[in-house]
Image (cartoon, rainbow, N blue to C red; front, side, top):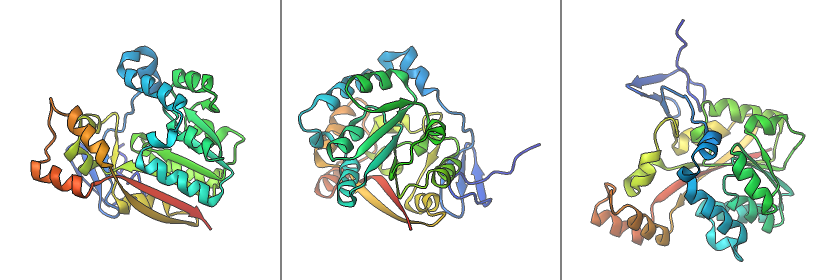
Length: 273
């Protein structure tokens, strides 16, 4: 018996499918028709060289004298808000190399990370971070009730983002939820390496401002979505790293990008009333 397609961001049944991609006609979310996910824990455990860059970066992020200079633009924006809101506690789901987790701690927040790759948990714990092994379900089963929850470049990896956010806000009821997704079309245009990873089974959904707002705007949460541009310095890095496989952006587009850096991420901020 076939299951009727449903939007993974807003649960609409108005879905148009072409090939391996479905489009929600209500919120605009693009979705892979096959939502089989990668085993990220196994990827780190079985082939460390695959994520060697992550391990080198992890030690740098955890030992740098000034973590603020290493933050991505959206991480810096959230840390600023956390400080302004005097948020007492935060859970960062999918904390990865722990850069944002450490920055939140430096800002005075009681921050706990969850990460599915055991080797990252071990390394971050050795650096003094408070990290637990597990995914979103592990957090839901824990006794933690943080003021804020963050999912930074995480939901595009999930097989059912709607279900994950639904359970999170109903069970934990955080005051703030921060969700960051790639502005995928722009990122692909300027970064061939990103484009190579922006496919199933790594990324399963592709978001816009409207779909991200629909994902977060439920159960009494007020939502704002911010467009976060890349930095000029990082744009230079993308140019250097993509020399062997140049992205589609033309010289004129690169020139314009350095004058006015393009949006690379969408930051969704949900606040409970």
